[in-house]
Image (cartoon, rainbow, N blue to C red; front, side, top):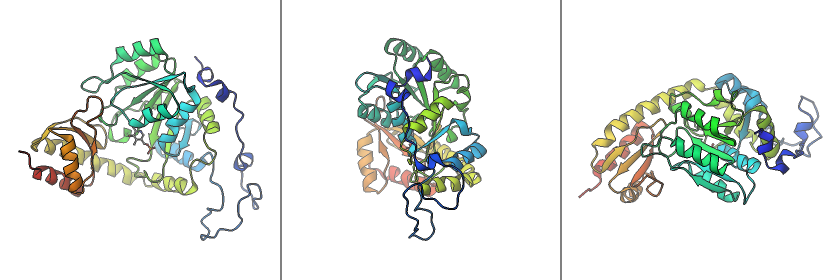
Length: 350
Ligand SMILES: *Cc1c(COP(=O)(O)O)cnc(C)c1O
């Protein structure tokens, strides 16, 4: 099926809003086109002007620094915006469905509910691998518009193999979304290279994790140019503020520091993987390709509340599918990780 025929009919036919900054993209001396203020009260910061709706400089930098081709990228207000955008482009409320593999990132389900889209859940296996047979059978039967593969997966930390992802791409007549929010911590191969062959693949990245810009809200979708164009037409014109675009450009110019930060996090992850199992009350530490560990405990809820009292906040995932008594613990600085370890050691298990 073509990308267009999968889109909601009104979206495929949309004639997009053209903002002032779309009509004229070059450089001029006098801008009287956007009803902005000519004054800049907060000291020449340029905030009196609207931001670039297409994030041109940022996307050029992403191409140069990360090799994400300019013609394939869309910048969102976090990848959360891009997930919602995909629902709005491809799913008719009250009619369509999406496929999720639980346990996974909770936002997919919330955006499905907001858009009145049914969720088909095909659980991951007990070691959090994809259940390919069940996924393919469900796709054939229910024809979900979107299939979300989170790899490495939140909250499990596990990656899906490119071979398994390709099996899904071969069988899926809808859109396959591979969320690579934690990709940089994995050392595995990206799915981006598959877009050339499978045009119904969208890969999501974010600057919220290893790029340390969660506060700036920068998500990246990599998609075939037809879809990239449609995503730009459907998103809010000025979805990424100019301070956010500037922060992202600065972060990309310090890529060496980020690479070093990822190395540090992976070393700390390994240290925590080794030390946590020696602590009473810790039942199991799952292997992780991300900047967090999923840890099975004797009593996740009791530990969670104890850690809050110790002024340490982790994520209690005990109510997620197959995550009974699991805590999700982000890898912090060495000092922060040591403080967590000490608190866990001090817990009065009886
Ligand atoms: C953290 C995270 C994101 C990032 O969301 P942003 O909106 O870009 O901050 C996306 N997907 C998953 C699975 C995540 O865990």
